Image 1 (tube, rainbow, N blue to C red):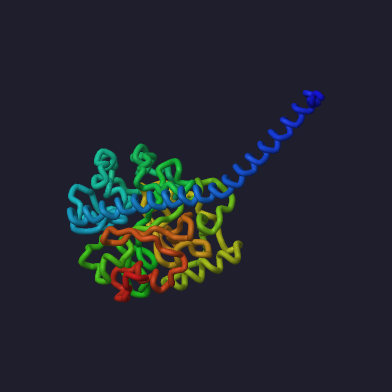
Image 2 (cartoon, rainbow, N blue to C red; image 1 turned 90 degrees about the vertical axis):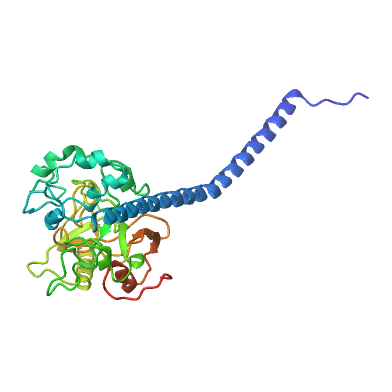
Length: 352
C-alpha cells in the first residue's frame, strides 16, 4: 500500500505557520532584551558624561592653582578691584566685569584667545538682554567663541554656543568684601579683592572652588524650564536681604507665589566672558539642586545655586586643592555652607 503524501498546499501552510511563530518569538525576545539593556546603556552614558564633567572641573581647578602660583592670588571676579595688581590697565575701572575664567585661558592652552580680549574697556554689562554694549561689541569675536573645557556634556542646553557650566564659588552670598551689616558677604574663593590661598584658613581641601550650574534657556524663550534651570527676579524694594537665610526664605516665597517675580532669567550662563552670579559665579544660599527656584535682585544679590542633571541628584564640585567630588543634594545645609566659606572656622571632615 502506497503511503498518502499530504497536499503541497498543506505543507506550505504548515511551514509558513511555524516561521511566523518563530519570528514573533524572536521579536519578543529582542524587545525584552532591548527593554533591559536600554536603561543600562543610558545609565552608562550618564556616568561617562558625569565623569567628563568632573574631568573638565579638575582641569579648571588645576589651571586656577597654576594661576595662583604665578600671580599670587586667585583670578579676579571683576577687574574693578584688581587694577593695582595688573600693570598696563587704565584706571579707575568702573565696570570691567570679566569673568575669572577669562584670566585662566593662558593656563588652559588658549593664549591666543586671551590676547584677543580688550580688558581695558569700561561700561561692561553682564545683562543677557544688553549684549550690545561698547565692551561687548569690541570683544564680540571672543564673546561668541565656544571653549569646550567650560562646558558640561550632560547639560543639553549647553550643547551649542559659548556657554559656561562651571561657576566660581563666591561664598554664602555675594563676593563683595565683608562689611558691617553684611556678615555673609565676601567669604568665598572669589571675592574682591582676589583671595590668596593663605587667606583660606579653613583649608583648601574643604573649601569649594568651582561647582556645576545649569545653563538657562536663550534670552527670549518665555516658557517654564523647571526648578533646576529657571531663575526668578524678585522685587524686594530698598530692603535688600543681607543674610543667606533671608535670601533662602525670599526664594521659597517666590517659588510658592509666582506673582511676586518680575520675570525669569533665561539667559544665565550662556556666555563665559561676563562675570557676576548670572553668568560665572554661584553661592551656597541653597543646597545643590534645591527644591525651590533660584531668585535674585541684582547680578550678585540672591541665590545662585549649584545644579546639574546627573543621575542621583549629585553635583560635581572642585575644591581648592584640585580634587573633584560629587556632592548629593541631600547634604546637610550647614555642611554645604561650611564648604562654601574659606574662613568660617567650621570643622568639616573628609567623610561629609
